[in-house]
Structures are given as C-alpha cells and as structure tokens.
Amino acid sequence: MIMNKQEFLTYAGLQTQTLEHWLEQRWLIPDQTGVGANFSDMDVARARLIGNLQTDLGVNDEGVDIILHLLDQLHGLRRVLDKMHKDL
Amino acid sequence: MTNPYEILGVAPTASSADIQKAYRKLAKTLHPDLNPGDKAAEEKFKEVVGAYDLLGDAEKRKRFDDGEIDATGAERPPQHFYRDFATSDHAHPYTNNSGFADFLDGDDALAELLRRSERARANRRGQDLHYRLPIDFVESITGANKRLTLPDGGTLDVTIPPGMVDGQILRLRGKGAPGTGTGGHGDALIEVEIVPDRRFTREGDDISLEVPISLTEAVLGGRIRVPTPTGDVTMTVPKGSNTGTTMRLRGKGAPRRDGGHGDQFVKLRVVLPKSPDPELEAFVSSWDKGKTFNPREDSAS
Image (tube, rainbow over all chains, first blue to last red; front, side, top):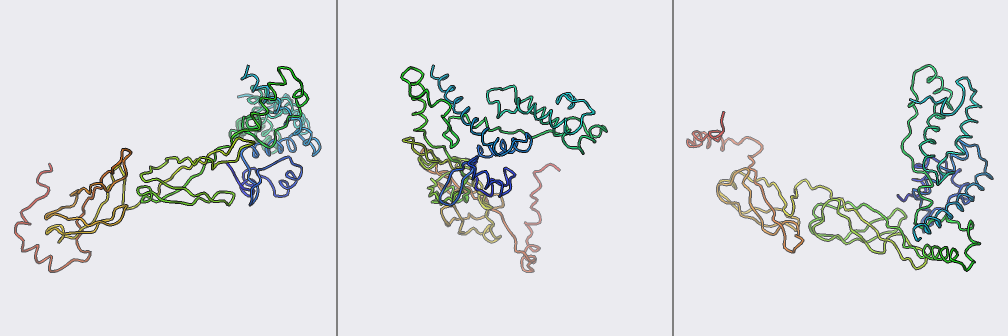
C-alpha cells in the first residue's frame, strides 16, 4: 500500500513533529514525488520498530541512529547471503 | 494459559520498574527486528509483549491480579515486522552494503558473487502498483476512456476495453513504480470495479432489463423505446403481451471473447395508471369474459 504523509501519520500513529524529526534524521526515507512523499508498508514497519526502540526499550536518539545503521548493514548482508545461498 | 509473571520471569510482587527491566532484557534478545534470522523469536516475543502489555500497565495488572481479566486480555493483531520487508528482493532506500563493501574489491569467487548480486540489484525492475477504478455498468459493456488520479497527484489514462467484468484486472505495462538502473518501470495493475446499474443486470454475455408497458401497449401491441448500453432502440411489443413476457434483442448484450455479442433480454411488466380511472372501471365491469377468466386456475389451491 502506498500512502501520503497524512495517511501515514494516521496509519503509523505518529505526531507530525515526530515524523519531521525522523525524516530529518533520515531514519525514514519515503519515496519523493513531485507533490510530496509516498510512504510504503515498509516505512510503516520501520516506524513501528523505531517506536519500539524508543518507547519500549528506552533507546535514545543516538542509540536509534546506531541501531538502524547496524540493522541496515545486517539486512544488506542477509540479502547477499540469501542471494548466494540461492545461487550456489 | 501461561502466567505473564512467569513469561517475564519476575515474582508476582515485583515492582513496575523491575517488570520494565525484565521486559527490556527479554525484548533485546527476542525482538524480531533485532534478531532477523531467528524465526522462533517472533512467537516468544509476542508472548513477552502480551505479558508486558498486561503487567506494564498498572491498571491492567491490578485487574489481572484481582482475577478480572485473564492473561489473554492483551491479545494483539498480527503485525508485520520490519525484517519482513528489509531482506526482500525489492530495491529500497535503506539498503546498506557497508557491511561487506570491502569484500567487493577482491578478485576471488566470493567477490565475484557479491558483485554480481550488487549489479542485479542495481538494475531491478520497479514494483507493480495496484489501483482500483470504479466504472459504470454501461461503460463496462461499451468500453470507455478513464483518467485515474494517483495518490501522488499524477494521472493515468486508462482505456477500458468493452465487456469488462467486476474485479477484472487491467495491466498497464511500464506504468508502475520506477526501477533502478536499467531495470525499467513496473506495471500498473488496475482492478475494475463495476458500479451496479439499477436498470440492467448481467448474466454471462447476456443483459436483462425490465421495462414497464401500459395496458394499451400490452393488449394492442405497439412500438416502444428500450434503453440498451449502446443507446435506445425501438422494439415492437406484440399484441397480447403480459407481465413476464420476455423478448430478445439480438446482439445487444456484452461483447463475447470470440467476437460477436450476447443478447439483451427485455422483460415486460404491465403497469396500470396510478390513479383509478372511472372509464377503465366501467369497461372492465362490462367485460364478461374478463370475469370468467381465472389466472389461478392452474395453480393448486
């Protein structure tokens, strides 16, 4: 599902201010189109993860930054591993 | 039913700070997004979240302790975790290859494999995008040109071929999301939703329609105008037509796959004038044959 900013806020249960902050931090990178950002289900799941980290696990901004960076690397690696697993 | 205190590994007397601490400790090792490769973690994590939902909330915890709600009081809807998307094949902006970039420069077999998969991802086709498009019944038979307004404000011109059925999907090649590199665009998949018409109903390739006629037209016959999806046509009502008499308009139905068209069936319904008419009453009371005719004769009663 592709949604605009307003729909995304409702769907992910976020405040505008929070979202602006996350976008500034590049924690969320929605598709940019001529008339605004397009958010996907993946962005919703990522937003939920960030929310989990901050609220439930008590991680601060710097911690979220580091975790996301490491997670993105981990997924990059997992993807390559998966590809090689299929190729071999 | 598992005891939420046992799930979190705390004593029933634990303070809320202890419960939070226990939850965080477990969540760190069980959160599916922090353990993308651990399939079993998800089930356990759900249990832990359920338990924490209950015990982390002072109000709910009290009600649980008092036996007002059971451990399932905190059932959650199924959730898609980030990990479900992150390793998928689709290109996404969060891709990060710095975890293995150094291996890419080598000249061994591993480096070659890595480079190949990097290239494949660099030229990935864009995603297919799904849309719904409501059209009128008449348009579904005759075909139409429609303009779809996309969520991003853009538009998409769609040519609806004649003879669509509800739920049919049109594929517009190259009108989906952009790909990466030489991957090209994905397709736009448009599900056509047919808004029912209060006049026409469709069965297979045939269309049915009910048309009211006057008593005069029913008794004496006549020519009436009948709507079809392709415009009005003139039809002859034979003498002595009745409610329920069905007539066929050949080739006025939906287009067939093999060329040609289905038929339109016109079902007549005799309608008397709304207000009682003294002349008609006088005539009918003087009409002797009408009094002896019993349309219920055949039906067993």
